[in-house]
Length: 468
Image 1 (tube, one colour):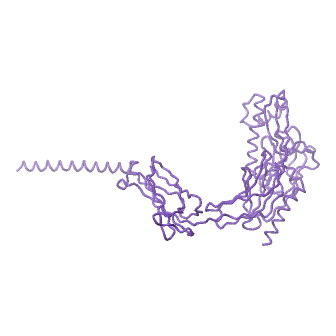
Image 2 (cartoon, rainbow, N blue to C red):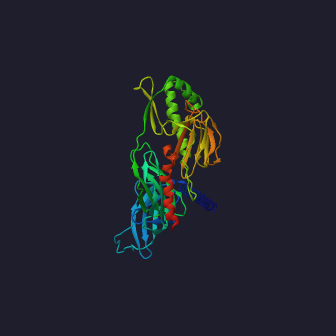
Image 3 (cartoon, rainbow, N blue to C red):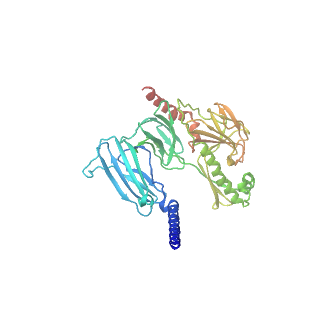
């Protein structure tokens, strides 16, 4: 009897040990499954809004992604009465992302043809990943996207524009854009985009356009696109007036480098370690100039989104009884000792005016001061926003009377001339910019040019807008 009791105890002990081992294996396997990347539990993602627009002409691109690897996907389109499968693909190479190009089927699929007149569709995308989760079936996502079909392009109506535009100058266009689901629009001219400001009424816009002085060719187009991807391009019919700009060759004398250039070197810790004369010249005339102009371009690139009811501009006359001492667009080549030893180059993107020492500088038009401080080669420099993307700068001042944020009226004294920055004599560097691009100041100093290219364009457009 005792032997049978001991045998039963031994078998029970052995059974308990086996149970503990199996339980440990199960726990270990479970822990492995929950921590292994092969058993990840995150479902794939379909990157799309629940509601979108589609023109059915262009492929609809939808991105899918997964933490580990995508396995396959299916795509269905439903027109409200019929449903067809348009894609059933396996994804190779353990890709984590894929762009699905959904093309609207014009042909019959499995005896079914979608209604081409349907204005609403539903796209269903089913995606599986390569996870071993869910009994090695992987994770699954089903995304249903409601689609509104829109194949009509936006309407663009040009109300009025400047007859001509000069290389280095500006033109104005007033136009209308119409679309029930407009996504974006802009004016593009040879790589430059110009933002239009709302004008008078909803759907109407105005913008100044620049033909940069350093570009040979020019063409301007208004581009509008709706949420379905429909796009319309309308050309702005400017008559082009070419213009040549001066090229100058200037000697970089030691006195100039040891004087003005060295003073500017000493004002900026970025250049303090430069000792070589010619390296100093290049550092200021090219590197510092680029930095200073980048600030100007950034500040002058802003255009308001507020509705503009009118825009009147006076001719600019910043310095009384002034003489022109340097032109806009002058391409300057600096040589050292001999003319064949060119050491630096720069472009003069303003108009230099001189009168008497420390003469008063006036803002000829109302505006907001967006900068009033030192700006490297431009010295003490106030900068004013006059609206519609038009900005003016006043360089080399001895004193700045206004401060950033000030609202100034026409005729307000903003500064005095001087020779701060990279200036050898007392004068004003007067610059005009439109949406971050330098333009010919002479146009904005010409009363007739303003009347023909600005005032008349607005007047003509106003008759159409107000006559509705």
